[in-house]
Image (cartoon, rainbow, N blue to C red; front, side, top):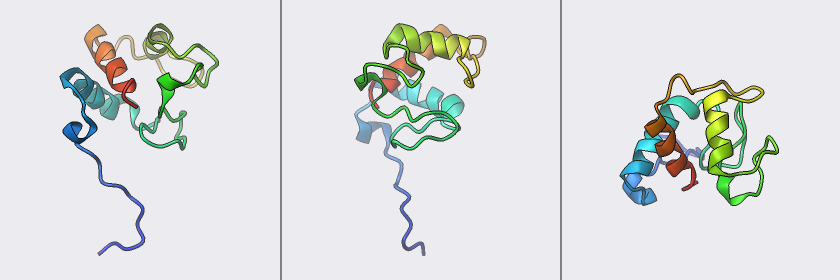
Length: 103
């Protein structure tokens, strides 16, 4: 029995109110992004937390927090973030953006 553990149970797509595109984007995030970025916490991993990313005016890099800039970072990488433009399809990137907007 675990006591004193502050690990929170992972919520389902339905509990988060995700539509099918957002749920697909969550799966992309889980596979490609979660090892470096926290979605529901303000703490950083290897990369910055993405919680409330689109609610801020700027990304941690100083770029505007909008779909065009985030798409560029995902496709081409930036500083320590690798590029995923040759890995993710355009639809996967759209799905990922839809999910990121829910954070």
